[in-house]
Every structure is written in structure tokens, then in C-alpha cells.
Image (cartoon, rainbow, N blue to C red):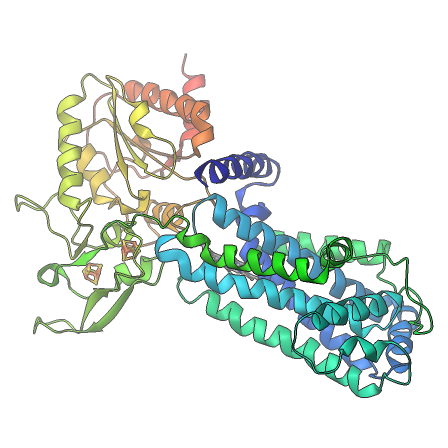
Length: 530
Ligand code: HEM
Ligand code: SF4
Ligand code: SF4
């Protein structure tokens, strides 16, 4: 399983790297797959409502009304029909990639099982919605789908009478059947919408809207497709003949050739095994779970920063229970906690400057405490020698920062880069631990803990508490977001930063705030230094 995940992850990281360079991380569709799924859902819903206004239910009326929508008002109804079809196809693609990506980046096991398990039924609803949609048009393709689906269902001992018989002649088929299909085609997506909402209950600040550029780009692409290649029907259904040659929509209807080539029983077997495998995947094998974050009420003032920053909705604020003069206190739900430490990075009491021998913040990780982080920082200061010394803070899920160490460079790896309270940067520079601080973690848009890189950037920019104090010399701080396959780039950027820091000389607390510089800018600046 590990080898498969690693190969897939390598593939995703490579393609994402290309797309980052081609479109920038903000416009990279692979960073927004869940959000694109929502976006396509809304396009399908809006275009579906339009089509429903003009759609007639009935054996003959259905086909006629769809033809009139497609040809009679090609500029509106025709475009809507095409958008409805192509956005549904696009949804299949992004949902499949979204699932594959969650698997590849190991974001589906441990406490994250819930999002995975609630995702699996969405796949079923998506297919049920698509297949009933093709059925409603009542053309040759619909006839093929209707017969193949009912024959497939008849294999199960569910119905007394074989339901495929309804499609043998017009005498058996009546308008009520189409009313049932319309009902199903509306009810299934509504249930799916509910499950999609349910799916997000354990992720906070879920990204349900793609960036504006991506939304515009994808809409323009769908519109262009709708105009260049309008969705059409494949001739009226004719129950007197068996449709032999139909053009399939391979996104939704690939199961029918499988049924034809094998047998209904084998196709049911494959579906059952596939579903069970998907459902069991988070426990094949289960993830070793690190100890959940713990709250120290003596140090918690109820500010709720930890709850606001936790990416997995694992912290609730509840009424104070210890009589301290604060309204609330933080409480961790250990079942939801992935031990990322982002809460400890957000807590105002996580400061290395405290005089107490071991700093104990309001919330902390038992396996990697803030006290240990300070010890490691102090130890790095003792080890580093010479001017141009740099302390690197990295993340366990990006590239291994320990391999970057040298005489001038010491590195500390955290469960997530956002576990680093900005006060540690201030501490490292003002206490002479190092002359420069270099932050690295997962690539922008690929953060293993979803929000770590984003929160870190906001904290450094002074836009989110706890922010980096103004007195910290920004020219001595650099960030570089890099995946494990970006080692060469990161090493180049770090070397340039070390050179830059050497030029600046040893630390003197200056108040100039020019903003944290991206390591890539420093490469350019260092190259300019004669
Ligand atoms: C209509 C279909 C789906 C939509 C619209 C959707 C949407 C989303 C969104 C918006 C997120 C939050 C992303 C973020 O902000 O980080 C998410 C998370 C997730 N989804 Fe889906 N999803 C869908 C189907 C699926 C399926 C089929 C699976 C897998 C079986 C799946 C597995 C996951 C997992 C594991 C996460 C959590 C990722 C993490 O913790 O970082 N989703 N989904
Ligand atoms: S360690 Fe991470 S998941 Fe756990 S409570 Fe803190 S922020 Fe939430
Ligand atoms: S951030 Fe710290 S002080 Fe604030 S509520 Fe959470 S644990 Fe308490």
C-alpha cells in the first residue's frame, strides 16, 4: 500500500509542480479539487432547474421536449443542456482525482477516516444522478441504459416481476415511469447535497469555493465546449428494435460495457468488492495515531485562537469549569485530533521568552511539546558557529530538513510548520541563536494539515494572531514552501539565504519591517551581490 501511495504521490507532486509554474498555486486546479466538485454541483443544479422548466414527462413528450430545448432555443436551453452534461462529467473527473489525491497524500486514515467514509456514498449518488439523467432524455442511448440497468437490477432477487419487461414494448411503458425518473433525478442530487455537507463536518474552514480565476476559467471552458460541441440526443427510443450502436458517455456509463463483457453477477460482485475495499481503506493498515493535544487550564485564558486555527474541528470552547475569571476554556476531542500542533502555535501562551524553566502553554502536544521546541532551539544556538548562521524550521510532512544541516545551518522539524509560534523567530534572532531564520513546509496548496502554510503566512504578514512582532528584522526571515521532490530548489534558496545573512552580518535587533521575503527573491538578490 505504501509503495502505491508513494508512486501516486510522486505523480501528483510532479504534475502539481508543472501546474504551479504554468498557472501559479492559486490557479492550480489540483489544489482545489473538492471546491471544484462543489462548483460543478452548483452549475449542474442551476442548469438543471432551467431544463426542468421546459421538460415534459411522458413516453413521447420527454424526447420531444428535450429536442425543442436543444434546437428550438440552442442559444439558451441548448447551452444549458450542454453545461448540465459537461459539468456533470467534470464533476466525475474532479471527484475521482480528489479521492485519489486524498489517498496519495495519506489524508484519509487516522482521525481523517470520517471524510473518506462519507465520501464513498457520494460516488454512488453521483453515478445514480448521472444515469437517471441519461434515462430522462428517452433517446436510443436512454433506451440502452434503461434496458441494461433494469436487466442488471433484475439479477438481484429484489423484484417479483422482472422490471426489464417494462421496456419490451410501448404497451408496458407508461408516463408514470417518467414521473418516477424525474423524481429520482431530483431526489438523488438533493440527498447527495446533504451528504456533501455532512462530508465536511470534520474539516474547518473547508475550501468550498475555487479561487475566482479558476471559477472563471473553468466556466469559460465549459461554455466554449457547450458552443463548439453541443450535447445532443441520439434519435428517439424505439422499443420495436434493440439499440445496438450508441455513443456512450464514458465518465458515467462505463459500467455497461463491463456488464456486457462479463455478466450482471460479476458486475455486482466487482461493485460490492470495490465498495468494501474503499470503505475499509482507512484501516488497511490503520495509521499509528500520535497522542492528541492536551489543554492546561492553568495557562488557558479562553481566547479561542486554538479553536479558530484547528483545521480538523477538534477543539471546542466551553464554559469555564475551574473558576478562573474567564468565560470559556478550550477542550480537545481526542478522536478528531491529528496531533498537528497548530493549536500550540496559535496559543498566546506558547512563548519561549517565559522565565519559567519549562514553558507550558494553554495547549500542547504530549509527543512534541513547546518546551522541547525551546530546548531544541537553544541547542541549535549552541551548535551553530560563525556569522551567517541560519536556523531552519521545517515540517515532518515536507522534505527532511535534517538533511540540510551544516556548520552554518541547524534544522528543527515540527509536526506542522504552523506549530511554530512566531515568538520563536523573535527569540532565535533576538537571543542570538542564529542570524537568520528560514521556514519551510509543504508546497503552497499541498499542506498536509490543510491550513498550516496559510496560517503561517498570515501570522508572518501580521494578519492573523499570533503575529510576528514588528521589531523582528524581516530581512532575516525567509520562507520557502517545497515538496520532497523540490530538494534542489530548496537547497539553492537556502544557500542564497545563508549568503544573504552573511552579507548582513550578525543580528542586531532592528525594527525595519519589510515583510518576510520569499526565499526565491533572496536567490535573485544574492545573485546580484558581487
Ligand atoms: C461531490 C463529491 C465531493 C465533494 C464536493 C468533496 C468536497 C470536499 C471538500 C470541499 C473537502 C475539504 C477540502 C479542504 O478544504 O481541505 C473535502 C475533504 C475530503 N474529502 Fe471530499 N468531496 C467529495 C467526494 C469525496 C470522495 C468520493 C472521497 C473519498 C472517498 C472524499 C474524501 C475526502 C477526504 C479524505 C477529505 C479530507 C481531506 C483532508 O483531511 O485534508 N471526498 N472534500
Ligand atoms: S493538534 Fe491539530 S488537530 Fe489536534 S487540536 Fe491541535 S490543531 Fe486541532
Ligand atoms: S489558544 Fe491557548 S489560551 Fe487561547 S483558548 Fe486555546 S489553549 Fe486557551
